[in-house]
Image 1 (cartoon, rainbow, N blue to C red):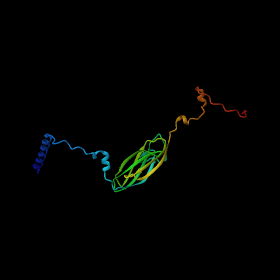
Image 2: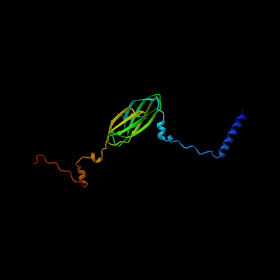
Image 3: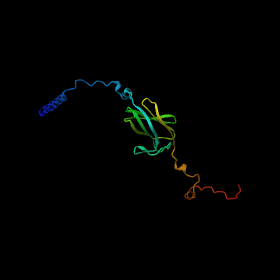
Image 4: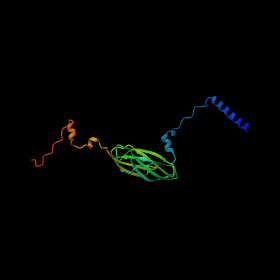
Length: 186
């Protein structure tokens, strides 16, 4: 048995060496036009998956694969996370997170849902305005959505009081106007 196995290995190795010495018979066939990524995605058969969103939460952070908090208003200084929990019949399935600002689509991200219970999240760097994140199935049908607002971050100059303090006046700044004395004529 060992001799037979050794002979098979020897013959396989010699035929590989022989084929490596041979010139290729012909150039590889041209790649058909349908082989590009867009056509391949379009040719992908539709799955029988039925995806349902169990929960959609907007949050400022993800901690231990869960939302750290829940909010509907955010500052423009941080990204917004859309965390979702799904159930899927006949996995895998695909969903898209579609982000819109002031009614205009600004981005989308697709992901596969590979098990009957699944959670995932998408994040977006946002700017001030009225926002919406929508989760869609493979056909583009809406499964869930959440509206939220993003406000501009407060600047230090905007948060400062309108009148300068006495300390500012001592440093060469214009003094604050004096308050009229009680009973003074107007």
